[in-house]
Length: 281
Ligand code: HXC
Ligand code: NAP
Image 1 (cartoon, rainbow, N blue to C red):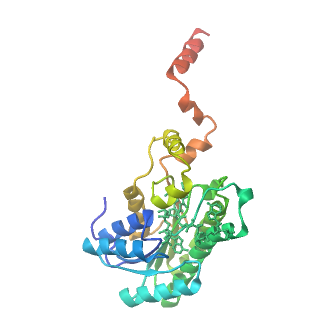
Image 2: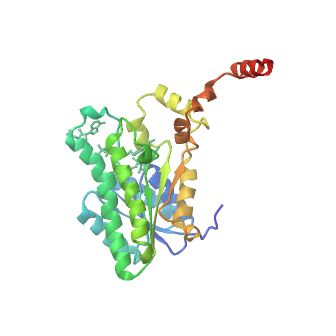
Image 3: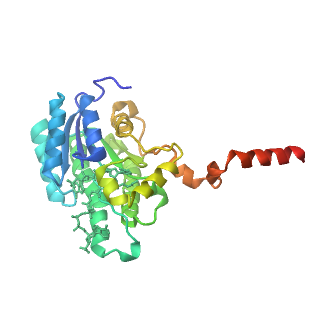
């Protein structure tokens, strides 16, 4: 789909880049020629993904960093700059989430998720944005949100609030920073199986089956599908796409939105009976 040098010369920092979708994006973007720098709290997954990238012939560094801490974010940017000279692309992918009845949440539970998702995104975006503006250098930011950033969702209220905030940040800065040649976009993924998400959000095998069966395409997303969309959105091929949020969910959120969509479960026999009745009248 892409030329193998699509991202040659680019330096991309991904938060949460050691696991799940962050890892998938890191591997794919490195394959397309970008130098990668990965940050997250745990050293182990970061080192492993970085080693995989290097084994495949790519370049990758990493630093342990809690994105809730602006000083730690600053330190990891300095480490990335020492290794690669500069960072020109940021993917805010780190997240925290869990399902819970909202009335049971403690203040700290809300703060933990909002801290990672909203404050973490702000710290990383500001730290890089300030550098790009001062250096008169173009920059690209891609924020990984969710479809319920638009709609809200019960049982994941801290995440819904935080992701809605990230989407607002994306759209706000897309306009404010366009004059500096800084572009911001978002991806709203539907369900993509990852250890991080599934262990916290899939309460049972039955619920997973239900989620798959009620999906319009009867399947979950594949990591490479999301990674390719990310490659397009951070590349110069999408230079005129700014402030956009691209949904990649196989039509799932629309399935919930359309008033008559539950008719997918209506048996053919009932459709045929209605058709016959209409013809008789
Ligand atoms: C209620 C919970 C809880 C749960 C933690 N807490 N889990 N409350 N239900 N399941 C509460 C704790 O009791 C504590 O409050 C507070 O949250 C902070 O918890 P800690 O474990 O001390 O915090 P921390 O170590 O910072 O961990 C953050 C975390 C954890 C968010 C709680 O799950 C995490 O590290 N997640 C990172 C990875 C992740 O979540 N990946 C999934 C992304 S998927 P008290 O009051 O007791 O101190 C995603 C997909 C969305 O976003 C869409 C899917 C389709
Ligand atoms: P994941 O593997 O759990 O990814 C979350 C990453 O964030 C982890 O690598 C984690 O690493 C890192 N992280 C968490 N807290 C952090 C902190 N304080 N500082 C730095 N890094 C931190 O789950 P995923 O499914 O791949 O999720 C990736 C992104 O996709 C998230 O933004 C998520 O909301 C979004 N998303 C996923 C789905 C899905 O179905 N999978 C759907 C919609 C949206 P450490 O624990 O080592 O810090």
